[in-house]
Amino acid sequence: MARLLGPRTNDTIVNIWLLLFRVSAGAFMLTHGIPKFLKLVEGSTQFADPLGIGQTLSLILAVFAEFLCSVLLILGIGTRLASLPLIATMAVAAFYVHGADPFQRKEMALLYLIVYITILVFGGGKFELGRFFRRG
Image 1 (cartoon, rainbow, N blue to C red):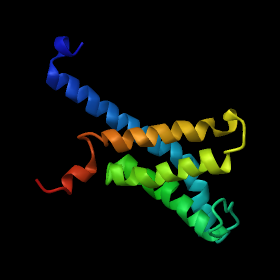
Image 2 (cartoon, rainbow, N blue to C red):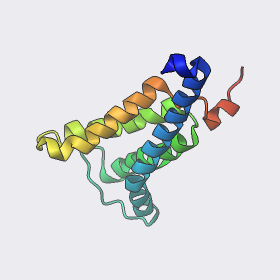
Image 3 (tube, rainbow, N blue to C red):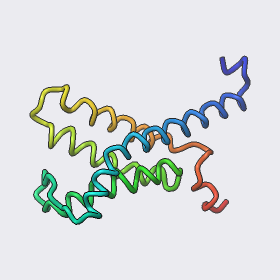
Image 4 (tube, rainbow, N blue to C red):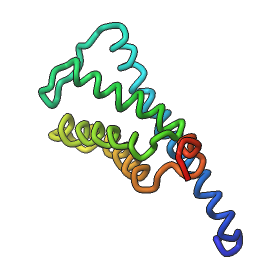
């Protein structure tokens, strides 16, 4: 297929796919992050504390990852760096919170984990806003 389309067309397709992939991943995670963000804004800090660091700090870290880092992914600002808290959050969800649960309970967290590791490895592509802030 690459021979038919040529290397430049293939690069364009890859970059369009990376754009769609990171925007989708960020948007899907926002469905989890927005309710947590609203909960934090309303002052309700009752939240799970799987790591023993306190409910408030656990909620703040979840909001940071699931809300703020998802927005950064969608915009393409610091994409690889923004994927790290999401990777950590999904690893905690899959292996700690749902560690003893059946596979079906941890499946979604594992899927998200693979998505965010993929974004870490491949980056966000050339259609990132962050490209405008980089020198060179």
